[in-house]
Image (cartoon, rainbow, N blue to C red):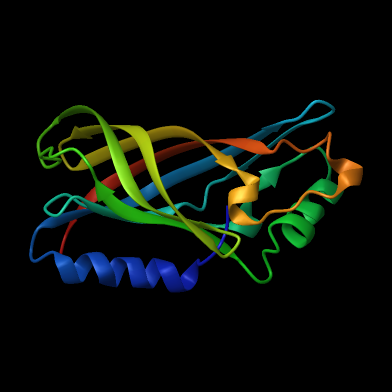
Length: 186
């Protein structure tokens, strides 16, 4: 997952700030992204706690970004190096982003639990794809909790797997996202 970190974080915040007036926005205070590659010869998992983002309930927009080199776990340090240098090329594409809108017309300023879908542009490895992703949102007081699980087809983002390790890296990677956000009046 993987392009756009410092620039998108600022751009996303400006984008959402420009579309909202004095309404509360929710900023991520804790965010985790985990990916799992379950291939025939190897199971790989890595996690990052550097998820940043903002949700604007009045216009139902959101923007998230994750720093690719922040992923840890893997089965070995060499595997992490290959992930960053050979597959996701994090020197060139240091972040992944997802920005868009909530599809359902739900008032996210009211306490409750919501099963929602979002539609937006997922950018990984410099390639942007439009996606609809399901998730759960719980709103309590000034806090919002978001969880989601979805898959990513590596081919969709031009992430190439060399034939020599083809059986060790899954073509489709599972992703789990969890975020705690707090209201912030602008």
